[in-house]
Image (cartoon, rainbow, N blue to C red; front, side):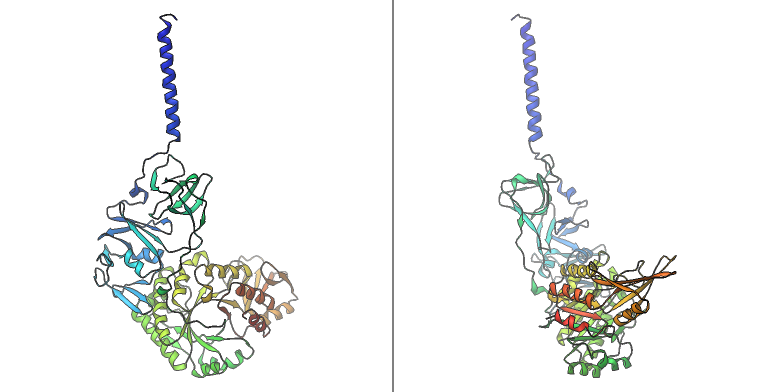
Length: 557
């Protein structure tokens, strides 16, 4: 080797070494997980000092709480929106009301009468917003809650059904995203349990007990398994008055006092009926006045036949703004006192609340009305039931689950799938519509409290050629059959809808009836039976054929 060649080889060697070191360094960097940690304040969306993150049922709330007095506080609006509680802000008297089965507690902002274990006030006010301490809420609400600092946060769970979990099999980290270069949210240790939110090929999205929602490598966790079920705290529910038989309730539409005389005829063939609900009471104005056509003679006749009477109260008057009247404790009390006085005078057995067209802002007041009514009604041994629309995405704010923890029976009005104002002609209560309503209600309310109402009526739809909207006319069972015969329509069974459908057409329009008859009633009763509901209700008595009662009773046995 020449003297000139030696330096060249050295340089080449150095280049190779540097290259190898570079490659090794690159490979190490590529396959070594980052240990950089995420800024948790930014992760939780905490932009101001004194804010506290709220992680509720594995979701980070977009409305943070506040951290005061070493306690996490939640705004009352968030409590109403995200939690199932018996707290209610009384705007008229500027006080928080906590309604339990044994009575009502009132809490003033800053009041030390009700405080957390640390001595912090349960309720505080800042900038016109009212906040409740999460530790205090937990005492009176069926939820699990843990609080942490750095940053301040509360991790809350109110739902425990259908949860899956994994166990950490070796120490690892939960990261913001799936990938070893994603920042670390939280380190986890062997044996720790994580809730599963989504499974991917190499990563699983999880939620930790400390409120981190991120991703963990599949190689560091066990296979998913069902999380242990947690029993609800029944002590926080209102004690229910329940019957040891299946309810068969028929609504009797009574519009005048003289209409009560029609009772004997309306029930003469209704074999198997256990309960009748006459439409006796109406909210008349925004001061809480209730009109009544209740009759002791009617109740006495019903009792002689072995029937209970649950008088119905509605809010159908054009003079009533339900949110306004129910927002005032004085007006709520007036309504309740009038109903209870009428119940005592006539001897009825229960109250059926049929408040419809409720706006979202009226629901807190409506729920408080149900609480106060139920407490007072139960003192008189009166059953309380409440009517609800079939659950749809647009009306889930009705909080049927909360209703079910207050009242004795929740009744699904399983009809009006298509109604007088519908843009398209269709069934009043197709089988998929009925079954969906039952299933969605059972996600919130136990079957032992659910009654499904079925229609004894249908609609004949007229789709006039050249017009955008159809028109319709309500018909009872015999009326529909007469119409079909008169117009020489042929019925055809639709197994998907669980109904006979009759169609005819002339030069001006198409006429369609989705028929409610013995066959359709039987299909609905099969669904009611299969879900183990507390019973059935019917709107309304007088529109049925006598032959339906044998079918209904068969499926209530």
